Figure 1 (cartoon, rainbow, N blue to C red):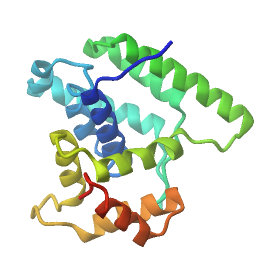
Figure 2: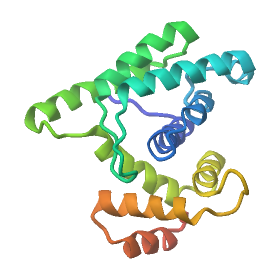
Figure 3: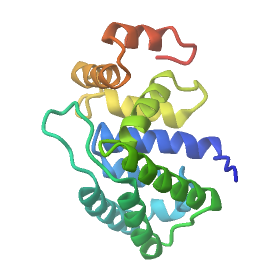
Length: 196
């Protein structure tokens, strides 16, 4: 059984992972539910509905992710618990769960279980997060969503200026996770056609 994700959903997943893990911004993740095709845009545009979704999502994430204090290491997470939280939120917010979403969620939860039985220290985020950061940094020029998320993660929210601390954190995380030097990470991004 093969599932193909629409490109907008793939971009949405990359942005959601980056917003959640790097910025810890559950409100930004809630805003992506339209791009993830989990909710129609008119529901996301409803201020009261969106506020309720943001609060519920924040509570769910706080139960699933455990962030370390160093600011660089990845949080711990069990994918099966994340799926359980999404399953709890789905009926409360009338999520539209396409078949590919359910198929991929089940497959990832099963694969995580197999990986954990072989390696108790296995982390789905350890595998997914570097891909998300790399995709974000090398992103396709035509993806407004990837560009907007990268801006959101690298600009100072108060001034709109580049935040060198945030950029350095992105480079440090990708370097630590990929095993490449920070210089190599920067050069890879700059030398990629879509890199920025």
